[in-house]
Every structure is written in C-alpha cells, then in structure tokens.
Length: 439
Image (tube, one colour):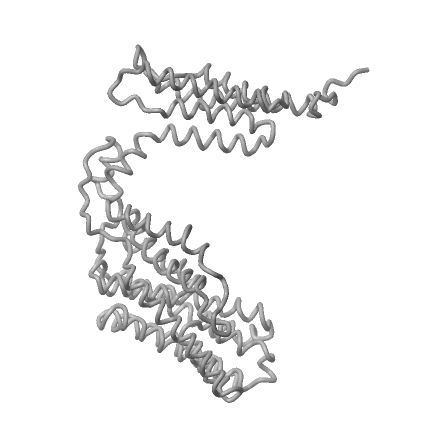
C-alpha cells in the first residue's frame, strides 16, 4: 500500500513535511493579513494588500521553496516587488508609505522559511505582526518620548559596542595588560551602566529603578557602577544620596561574587567565606536601601502623564530638552583610563620586585578588581594550610573598600563620598571582623 505521509517530493522533501510547511505558511499569512486588513483603509488610497493577499503570498513562498527551483523563488520576489511599485505609483495620498509593500515581500519569504524551519518562520511572522500592530505607539515613542540627546547618545553607544569594540585588537601590548579590546570593553560597560540608569529612571519609580539597575550592574563591576553614579552626581543629573545608595547596593553583588570566585578556584574557602560575605551583604543591602528610600526622588521617575498621553495620541512635536544626556563620555573615558593605569602599575611592580612584590601586587590589584585579587589569594591553597592567605584576603577586601570610596570622591565629589563611604567601610568592617575569627 502506498504511504502518502512517507512519500518524497522530487527534491527529497517528505509529503508530511510539505503539508506542515503549507499549513504553517497559511497560518503565518493569515496572522499578518488580519492585521493589514484592519488597517488598509478603503477607497483609492487603501493599502496594497489585505487578508487574502498576505495569505496567498505566504503560501506562494512555501510552494516555490517546495519545488526546489531557485529561479521560481526569484520570480516570486520580483513579482511582489513589481506589485509594490505599481501600488505606490497609483497611490495619491499625502503619506502613502511602503510598509504594506515591504511586509508583503517579507511574508512571501516567511513562506519560504516555513519549509526550512517552522519555529523560526512562526517567530518572524509574530514579530512582523507585532511591529505592524504597534505602529502608533512606535511613532509616538520615536517622535514624542525619546529625546534628541538620547538618540545621539544611543547611536554613539551602539557605534562603540557594534563597530569600535569588534575592530579593536584583542591582544595585550605589555605582559597581560594594555589590551585595547578590554579597555574599550570597560568604556562601553561604563557608558551602558549610565544609559541604563538614565532610562530606568524615566520608565520606573526613581528609587526602584536605581536600586534594581545598581544591583544588576554590580554583578558586572561594582567599581564601575560607583564611578558611573558619581558622574551623574557631579554633572547634576541626580541626587548624591540616591546615587550613593545605588552604589552601596552594587556592593551586594560584589560580596556575593566572592563566593562564586571561591567556588571556581578553591571550594574549600567557602566554609570560611559564607558567613562573612552574607553578613556584609545584608549590611550593604539594608544601608543602601535606607539611603535610596530616604533620598528625594529626583529625575522624571515613572512615565510622566504628558508622555503617556503623547504615546496614546500619536506623533507630535518633540518637547523634551536637548540637554538630557544619558551618559558622560569624557567622564567614563577618564575612569577607564584610571583603572587601566592602576592595572599597569600592578604589573610593573610585579616585574620590579618579583616574588617580594606579590602581596603588593595583590593589594594594588584590589584597587581595581577585588575578585581578581582574591582569586590570586584563593588559588594556591585552602584556608586551613594558608593562614597568611586569609590575612592577605582580608587586607585586599579592606584596600578595595578604600579604593571604591576614593573612586566615589574622585567621580562624584565630596557629598557623594560622604553618603557612600560610611556604608562601604561599614559593611567591609563587618565582613573582615567575621573573617578574623578564623585566624
């Protein structure tokens, strides 16, 4: 008996797979077609295609792919593109647009994709329909809510992350240091932290936004977070107490990462570190939240009523000030140069003093990256056989606390330092005091 499900087409595709592809193409076409049908209008200025056209275009793409003829695929694209040109020429409205024409060609290609990957084709169809459905809100977001300075800063950050960073050589020029790729990566991180903090303050309640973004950023770099918050204070973009609380909350992530470093390089250290780091984390969390909760809610906070109304009503004139920058490129560059310079100093000291400079190197490394310094302490031996290592770890944690406090003063000024430093030194004192019990 002939089994139609297991039969193969001339190009090797089974009948069962072909049926699935055609059904998926019909569904994808209907999904986009329903949205276009509701928005194509009526009369002579109406859009090119609607429910039936999009459904048939998607099925046509799947059929073309099932035939295995590449020339037929090209003919389908050319045919739909020609239809778009004709429709555009006949449309006499003031703002005809080309969205439906582009969507029709993409729908045809989604039908082609249904033969190759059903999940991917469905995802593209849903994404396309979502973009089409959100027309008014997307236009209002670009024209009303998004500010000119934010657009420029966003383009600059995207260029740095997507163009400059991949092109930078990923090799050190002196020992393991002065790596242009890592330096650019650090600069990108600093700018990204500032941008996320700025946008989150516009979208959420100011205190909630600052707290969440600070803890998340702390898992990447607490020192960079403290520096970024300080830059916001120095430039008058935020309140000193609010940013100090955020910087202190980022220290919670730093303390928790100490446990991850120990787990990775020498798990025997966990027995010693769990209680001190968790206690220090609780102190930093409570102290940081006290600062954040008691600070005045500067900045826009949640989405203003005017912005909400603008997004609901549609495009309109841009009313936001041009000076609302997301980050300070100059300040972030100075911080990145400072951190890189300290790393170079550590390496030079190690070359000069040899083994005698190992401790000094660890302490200097803790000025920049506490986790790298502690990894160097944890790796050689477990805590039971390395009492001196525990002392070095305690000293590295203390030095890092003073370094972070100094970074706060350098970037954010005296008021920022006065709010942040007591909390940093306080949770550090709790952590070190508990570590001292094991000596």
